[in-house]
Length: 236
Image 1 (cartoon, rainbow, N blue to C red):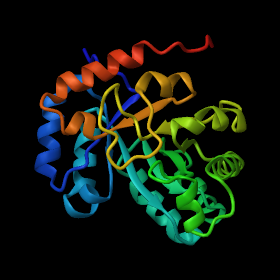
Image 2 (image 1 turned 120 degrees about the vertical axis):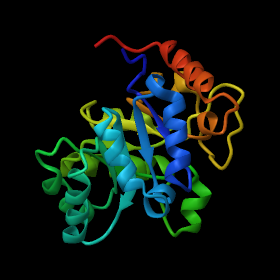
Image 3 (image 1 turned 90 degrees about the vertical axis):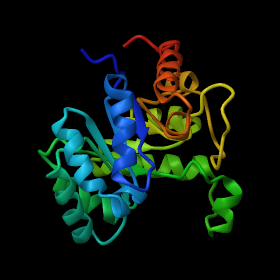
Image 4 (image 1 turned 45 degrees about the horizontal axis):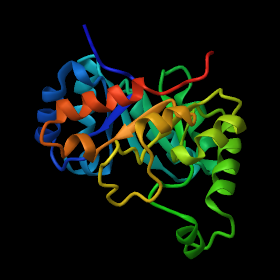
């Protein structure tokens, strides 16, 4: 029997399939949901690993942040849908989402709209040419994602409450930048604890280095799941 919490998604940020598989084997029944990003997907046979994980009854989140003309995005979504993956990221631009949503229909693949990366703050947005702050952009893109028919949003837990209000609680809210109490924040600028993220409105938490770089990944995952269980959530 699995003792995993499906709200915890472990990021397999490794250069090779073998390294990722080693961690999955260590975590065994403690973790049931994994994220595969650029490094592993493009350089480490991540697509094939994703298929293997699905066959092993694990859930897979391909974090590819697709952005292109609608037809090109649609073709990418169709290819990922065939793997049996549970989640896929699309940048929250109207044209990209318009191509993605019909392509995923009926597949069981939840499309997640990427709003603002958790490694970015207001200064970064200004330097990139935006005249809005983080909260304004996240709110706008969350609204557009809901209107487009997306299944979820990727955002910092700091904006999770705003997103939940903008989407009337109807979409998944996946939050990276999660660090347990006392952990190194690394290159993330807007980080929160697992307990805080859930209380602020997140439905799923993405955790990488606090687990993957830990001396004991199983213990690290267990401690995060314990923190998640402490969250004071509103009654449905």
